[in-house]
Amino acid sequence: MTTVRKCLMLASLLFPFLLQAQTLEVEGEVMGSWNADTVKVTGNIFLPAGASLFIEAGVVVEFQGFYGFKVDGSLQALGTAASPVIFTVNDTTGLHNVNAPGGGWSGIHMVAESEEDNITAIFDHCHFEYAKTWQEDSLPHGGAVYISGPANASFQHCSFLHNRTYLSGGAIYFNGASPLIENCYFSANLAGHEPPVEENYGYGGAVGGINTKAVIRGNVFFDNWSTGIGGGLSIDNGDPLIENNIFEGNDSPLGGGFGILRSQVLGTIANNLVANNYSIFFGGGIALIGVRANLANNTIVGNYAGYGGGLYFNLEAYVKVYNTIVWGNTAHGDYGGSVYIWDGPSVPDFYYCNIEGGQENFDGATFLGEYLHNIDLDPLFAAEGDHPWQLLPGSPCINAGTEDPAFLALPATDLPGNERIQLGRIDMGAYEADTMAATSITETGAPKLQLRVFPNPARETTKVALLVEKAGKMSLYLVNTRGQRLMMLHEGFLEPGRHEFIVNVTEALPGKGVYFIIGESLQEKVAAKVVVWP
Image 1 (cartoon, rainbow, N blue to C red):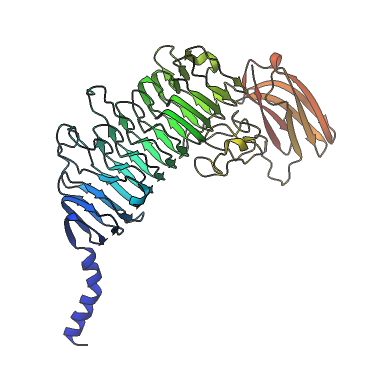
Image 2 (tube, rainbow, N blue to C red):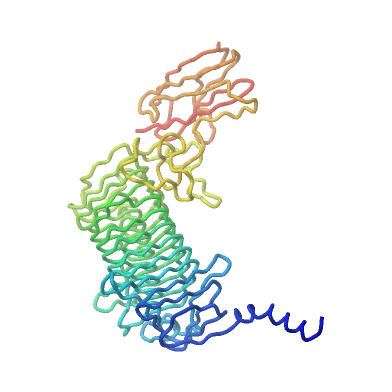
């Protein structure tokens, strides 16, 4: 092969890679396809009505100043986990100065007057960073993305970091649109400005929506902040679907984790972890203001507020709370570590929940709702690993939810994606346990000892049934969660068959809580949880 032919062959092999490494500069009207390594935006750009633009995986869209992207047509930005599409700016100096436009890019804007405008955008595996709005913006909402009217948008597997807006929706804002926001990550986004001008507060540190049926599913909201309502998320006058999200470490004066106001939610707000959020005023975890909704299987833990560390209700909020854990939340002084109710017409109901302190930990207006089948017992969280709020075997929250949750139309899986009902009855909280409360530690195959405890939970007495397959010496005793033996029920020889023992829990036990009945032979050991209610 000649040297010339070798060079031509090498060039043909390298040519696709050379194309990918290109830098493209754009401004004004855009359409077609972008597959360059970096697209430098040197002025405002717009995608005209009826036109389309496809941005390929791995493309970096770098704005060279405070320029925006107006979408009137069809946009697709389809990255991959390994090669996301990135929207960024070349210089972040002045990003947090809301009195000047520098330090960020101006975001993506979709404004539809009617569905016939056919404005659509699909973002998959995209990363949005360092977008902003400022004081004199004509569109002061939505740092990275602003959607108005019936435009269609979806965001899946996307990340939004370090975006900010002068008013609402630090990363995304929508009014009259109902986007799909799924499996996305939001962190260090800011909504609002200080001090607020003419009481114009920022709602939704990461995401703010109004007049919407948005689907908010499977996202992580971490360390976002707003000056008004909803450190992670705020919805106003909507019917959103909010499920399987994590709200952690967010901050807002009302609704540190998220806030919903003036809304009738027809679905169920379910399977959300709301942990370690902060509110200087009301609702460290969740603020519900003028809302009618069902909340089910949420875990609300470790939040702080001036009033209502876990939940805050105001403006005739009629909310039914099912199968939810409200634990370890705190408030200033005695102002409702778990729940704060601002006004008498707000009437929340609680069913099959584990609420620390019970009704005694409610504050504000007189509680007028129903409070049925709830407990106040240590949930026994795992406290370590990838899911520290998962339930340990023996948790009183296992199999303690509503007997028939079908009416709640819950997701088929829990927060980490496990099958929702695993042991015959739904658990409390966002995590479903997969370990039976009664276990055997024998390694010889099928257990020769079986335990049954009923009623369970127990208030005065409970019956313990020990099923023995093979005769022998047996011990049956009761211990606390530390393994300390509190009561011996039987010690000695037992014939094969069913043996029943009555336990007077009010006399034998120090108080409400979780205990274990242990059955032990020479070959094996079984345990069954018993929950004692007051």
